[in-house]
Length: 103
Image (tube, rainbow, N blue to C red):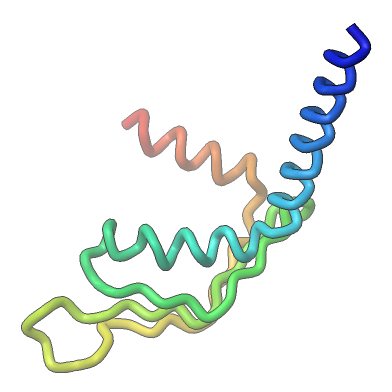
């Protein structure tokens, strides 16, 4: 019984450490996700300069977003977007998403 409690405590500690790491690494996680899944969604190369996420404030920004050109175009990129931010709260974003999927 004592051994099972220690194993359970160790698992809870590992999960807590993982949640703490993910919370503090949101910037890197979002940047890697944009660069990894972006080409699958858009069909062109996607490069991201920097991402800043603040879960406490509900703010986020993406700097240096570059979208490549599809095959057949001569320019190296289709768009290079200046820094953009999201001053919305998470609740507002969820409400907009929910209303867009309902219509």
